[in-house]
Image (cartoon, rainbow, N blue to C red; front, top):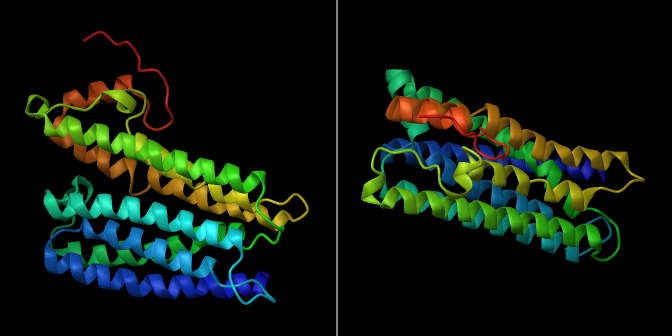
Length: 270
C-alpha cells in the first residue's frame, strides 16, 4: 500500500506542476493573477479525484469509499473553483495579488511563477490525506465515512454562507469603503478560510484506523491547509491589503473580531 501511495503522490505532483505552469501562462496573458487560485482549485480537485479512484490492489474497479471520497473532492473543487472563477472574471484583481504586483514590481511574473509552482507540492501533500481516506481497506461504509461526509458538506455550506454574506455586503452601495462585520464575519475575520480548513478534517476522519498508525498521516492535509491559510498566502497578505485600503476602519475591526477561530466580537468603545 505504501509503495502505491508514493507512486500516486508523485503522479499528483507531476500533473499539478503542468497545471500550474499553464495557469501561470494564463494569468500572465490575462493580466490578473487571481487565475492562480482557479487553476489550483480545479487542478487539485481533478488530480486528487483521479488518484483516489485508482483501484486497490487486487481490484479492478474503485470501491464505494473511493467513489465517495473522489466525489467529495470534486464537489469541493467545483464549488470553490467556480466561485473564484466568476469573481476573477467579473471583478478587479484579488487584493493579495494586487499587493504582490505592486510590491514586486518588474520581478512580479518571475516570482509568481515560483508561487505557482510551489503549489504543486502543496497539492501532493494534501493528496496524502485524500488517498489515505480513499484507500482505507475497511469493508463497506461506516460511521466514520458518514461523519467525514457530514464534516465536508457542513464546511462547504458554511463557506458558501460566508461568501454569500460578503457578496451581499459589497453589492450594497451604502457599504462602499466599509468593512464587512456582519453575520459570520462578526465572529471571525476570515470565516471562509475557517470553513475551508475545517473541510479538510473530513479525510483524517475517514482514513483513521486505530490498528494502523500510518493513517495519522492523513492529518497532514488539515495541518497544511491551516498553515497556508492562517500564516501563508491566506490571512497575512489579505490583511495587509485591507489595512492599506481600509486603514483605521480595518484596525478597529481587527481589535474587535478574532482573526480565524470564531469567538464573540469584543465590545470596544468607538
